[in-house]
Image (tube, rainbow, N blue to C red):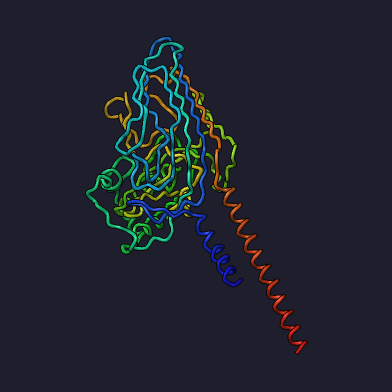
Amino acid sequence: MKTHKKAFLLLIFLFPMNLMSIASAEGISNYEVSQSVTYQVELNYTLTHTRSYPQTYYFKVARLNDRQPNSTVTQYCPPYQESNLLYNSITGTDSLTMGSLDKFNNTYDLFSATLSTSDTITLSQKYNVTLSEVTFGTILDSDIGSYNTSDEMFDLYCNNTETFYERDDPDLIAVSNSIVDPSDNPLEKAQKISNWVSNNLTYSGSLPAGEKGASWAYDNQLGDCSEYSTLMVTLLRIQGIPARKVTGFLISADANLQPTVGQVFNFQASSSGTSDLLGHAWVEYYIPKIGWISCEPQNPNYYKKSDYLRFNLNIGAWFFMPGASPGYDYVSEFPHIPSPVASDHDAYTFNYDVKITVLETSFNSIDLIVIIIFCSILGVVIIGIVLLIKSSRKKRKEYLTY
């Protein structure tokens, strides 16, 4: 009986450790997937030309990136977003190139069309996307590898001063160095910088359109998600830590939301200026042998965590825009709503509909496991009490007989 009880207790002790699957791959380690949600995402976009004269439209539309260790286009990335494109239809175009990759390994569809009155362009896509809550556990100095500063990653995400990412700004250099200690490892530096940005910027949701940049955010102590992210990225790069902005949209701003199977989320944007799609920007920074770590600089508790509520469209900055004039053919932050390059933006109307259906969640299974574990422990306690009572009665009976 004792042997069985020990084995059962050992099983109960070990079983909860399987609630989080600790995974590793080449260049990626120390992360845990605690819970996940699988969604079906349907995107439908229609642009209609309304002028009597024709106009040419140039499009570059980002796909939902496949962000996981086995992806053919991402590297050193935990399974933040496992994306499977089921359907992709684009009509009304003169030229069409599907599935192009840029230097940041974002995937795009490129197309253009010259439209006359009432002509339309349509885009329809359907995905199955699994978003996971990814967290990183304790990371020791010995877990961290060495940076290869000659790697292309540093040219893309660290070495260079760019517009909005003013790595050579003396004020930013001074504050970055004051936040961290020289002996800190990259994760400790990232945590301190994330906390500083969160505590020293005031959020504003009413800033005019257009990116302001890291120096502006620091000077004004103000920003939205874009300025929070740009400032954190720049302060990290000053410390020699590759970092990049991530853009996409949220299914909800409520970080505690647990979607249920069958639940449907609908979002809509149009040329009338209405939109309820929650565009968002956040940060990833790179630690060798650990991988790209997601960070929400508006929330200090998210300095090494991502959740199952954010859909990623782009990583990096300075995206080529087809059809734009020289000198203006790159943008730092790519739009999350399909937006054409055209000479007259009053010559068309558009509608963009996003439907997101919850297909599967890990919440119910985890809750069931917790219930089973609780009941099992309770059963063991009851059995123990019963055996203890029986043993006590037996000893008492022997004592009385004696």
